[in-house]
Length: 408
Image 1 (cartoon, rainbow, N blue to C red):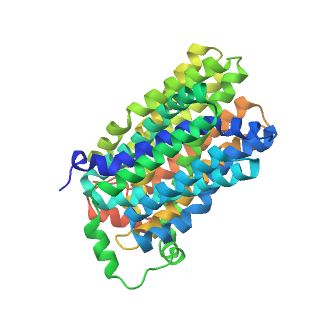
Image 2: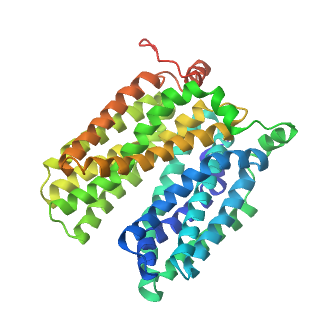
């Protein structure tokens, strides 16, 4: 039985390197577009292209990983990411920058799917939640420190230097994957014996009940988390905080978020997934409802810490639920559909805030999104099994999308 220490470099090294690169370039995408002559709306759309690329790549990523294996897909994703970073750095016009950013979104979808499937295969089920929560945690760590590294190089060499950090990160992850042991080699050998690979559509159709039940819960989780990253800066601006104080609020919340991934995973492994996903959603919902009551730096920071706590304990829960629900055969095809639902929620959350703020004040939108989180908590309480996560009966129930019995 593997423990997390024995696979840490293989499992998490490439992820944190890739996340550092993404963190370094995300704050400067808008600036790059503006420097190339884009208007404000088009520059904002450049950031959205990352998410659009991920959505577009989720289903093809499943088909690709099923054909060539998780490790090969990871290596290919790193190479594709390096190309996208280099294209962004050298872009002579907005169209080239847009194409490069879209490529980065595609690479992120392949990398994320392959890494989730890779870890699901590599670790025993008793460590699954901790393994996937740690994966979410190292991504948060990379995204937290990446902007600081990017800011340092941009200050010295200009905007394009941030993308050079991204190229170096992607290349380093690529090289690391070439030299570390393949921790899923045995599973891949079994896959190669299969002469026929099922299509993503057929696998998702077979498991449509799971996607209609727990999958819908994942939409709630992802949209609520994405709303948090949008609503806090908007409310900070609404109460008159400047950019420096807004960044500080977000940084403190992010630090709390970043520190809590392992305890949440441990609770899920020991007591069951519901004991993390339900409190996480309730805390996020409560935090959003409380946000409009704040009117100073101290109180918005306090609420942001609550939101960071709720988000942090739920690190990896979407991936863990997906891993639990996935079949042993055709796993990557199923997970591609699962990630499509998750990424759809990530895109839908901020879009819903945008729609709501056209008809009601920002405070009302925050309360409404808090209500969405509470509805999501209720939905997840019904559909996520509340039994021993090691129980085969529990996993079978999860895959069939059945309700959890009250006495479980």
